[in-house]
Image (tube, rainbow, N blue to C red; front, side):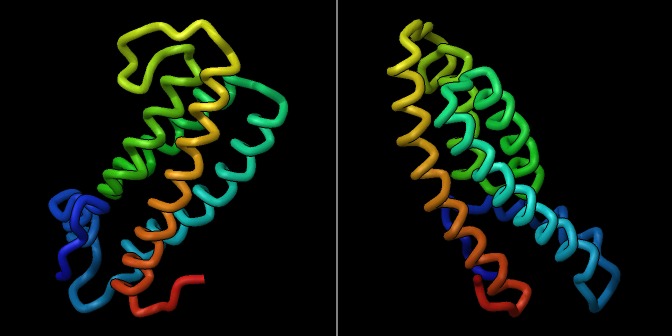
Length: 136
C-alpha cells in the first residue's frame, strides 16, 4: 500500500480495506465512491450557504462531512471540516475562543472551503489511483 502522507491516515483506511472480501475491493470502493458523491454535494451546498450567510447550516455541514471523512481516515479533509464547523458556530479554528463577528466567520469559512476542496482533490486522486481509476 502506498504512503499517503498527512492526507490519509493509513491505519484508519486499512480498517476499511479489511472489510473487503479476499481478492476484491468492491465494498471499500463503494464506500469511497459514496463519499466522493457526498463531498461534492456538500461543497455545492456549502457555497450556497456562504452566499446566503447561513452560519448555522455551514457548521452542520462541516460536522457532517467531518464524520464521513474521519471514517475513511481523510485527515486533512476532516481537519478543514472541523474548522468550518467551528467557524459556523462563531468560534475560532480550534473551537476554543468565541468569534461573534459573522463577517469574520464567513471569511474564514470561505478561505477554509478553498483549502478543503484542494485537500479533497488530492485524496480523490490518491484513492482513485488506489482503485485503478483516473480522477475526474
